[in-house]
Amino acid sequence: MAGVTAVFATRPAFTYEMPPQKLFDDAEKISMVGLSLNLLCQQYSDKSLLERLASGTVVECLFLDPEGEHVKAREQEEGHPPGVLSTLTALNILALQRVYGKLSADARGNLRIRTYDEPVRFNIVVMDDLTCVVQPYLPDARGVESPTLVAEKQPGAPGLFETFTQVFESMWNRSKEVIA
Image (cartoon, rainbow, N blue to C red; front, side):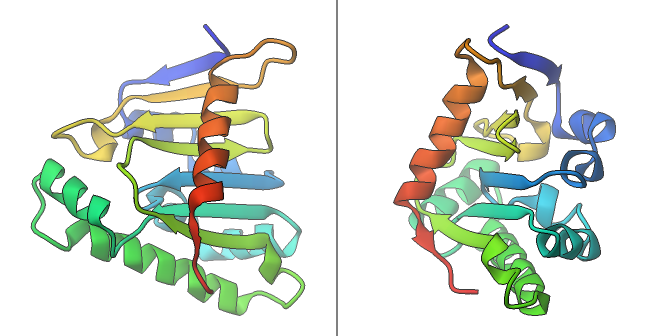
């Protein structure tokens, strides 16, 4: 099973069993890459996020560049009018920038926001270098319709956790920092 501990047919089935509060409330580090990162930006409260960041949790958010070429391609693939996904993504980035503005100077370094302009392949969320949630972006389907995998780090045995954390790290290293 390569470290896979759960499989869900869709994102709603996943979030029903593993809501954002369950994933994030005790995390010390959250690393995310995807299109708009709605799991954090739309489904997790600002109050909870502020508490996490103020208590020392590091949150790394890597969004598909809302002004890039690849968001336009995804909009076409999902059948949206131009600007739908880019606007959603830009709004989510602005929401995190608003959260950033409410943080103390000491806590601001805990929220890191970047963008990338590459084909969107996966939504990846890594918590505490132990648990990884992965969703593929399927052709002709919205992200909520994608299957969701949960993989746990298996000491001494490489598996999907290591594969997808490596994908996140590689993309993070190629990304562009967003000034908060």
